[in-house]
Length: 303
Image 1 (cartoon, rainbow, N blue to C red):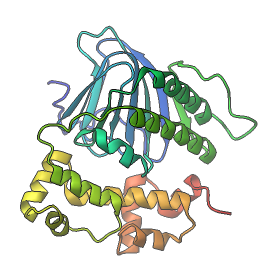
Image 2: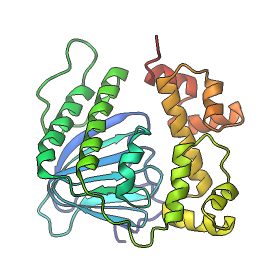
Image 3: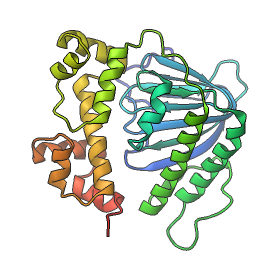
């Protein structure tokens, strides 16, 4: 069976659990590949330093060479491998929950189905991006005792940011990478066939996930019938409008828990959940822990 046509009954290679920042640097030979027919619960960022890789997500495809950043959003089947004919693929990779502000930077580079491809960052940016990845690897290993380690290298080892300080430092380095690459690159033309009405609907969801969106209200906002909108959205995004809305609301709730001291009930309401019971159940299913416990382990609360 071709690698980009996986068996949907096969969960594929497990991804790190959501809520963690996990990263590494690999140099893989021909034959290496990962398939996740169910996608991942976290975002995946890849930055190629040498050789060539091939990535797919839903119906979108990308070929990544040195200096290319490819980002895969959660919840859509994906895979990646050393590109046929390439001698190897050397790349950094990061699994994490993306910060909401990154969406505006990545959106001009959307290739469809939750894939973002930044391929034209100038060579002068590459060294700084590489340094940011090495710093992220060092910061992720910091225990909070003493100074963060120096001299992280492309050693092929996986780093997991367990502590809240290490996690935030690692995300700050990744934010620098996303900003550097997207600000310096030139957006490519939208993928042929990607409907601008679906793009607009996704923008509406991302801008205010707590709003009382429905299939009908989103369809009306982009001048489509509800049935046509739901079919087109599901086909192009890889998930239904309401599933995409729920994922956006849960991401928004996680950010509020991490960065505010709002009571859990108000976090749920601000994220669009009418029932506290439903919010707790959905959050636990998504992140593996109740909202209160998630805040305890992930948040740096004011004061």
